[in-house]
Amino acid sequence: MMKILIRYFFKGLRIILGPVMLLKEKLTRPKGIIRPEAAQQSVDQQCQSLALYQYKTCPFCMKVRREMASLSLNIQKIDAQPPGVDRDTLTREGGQTKVPCLKMTDAAGHTQWLYDSDKIIGYLQGRFAGAEAF
Image (tube, rainbow, N blue to C red):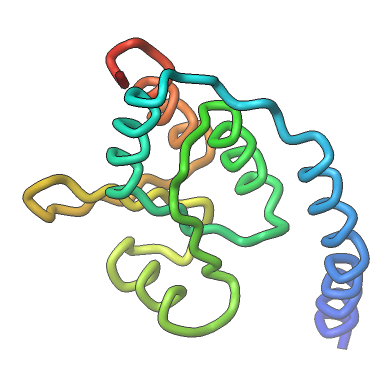
């Protein structure tokens, strides 16, 4: 009985706080890096091989999305919270139902799954923050 009450309490809390968190994220989104057009096209091309599995109101996912905005990265965002194909893909191919998770596919079609917001941010900064991204 207590488990059920706790579950409903946190579900209610998410319903109330979720929209507030999303509004705060939108209002405080950092201004992205401005690159020359050719450089941004190159970055956009590289981002096509990436996908972020996330929950909209997960604070760790918001942290990754914030970094994506500051680096001007157009990475596909996939909502893995509702049951369905996207969540099943994350669990089956990634090995865990945990977010945030960055799916990285190389030119040969090999896929790697990177979990943990700090590791994802480190990867994105290492790949896109320096001159080598251009």
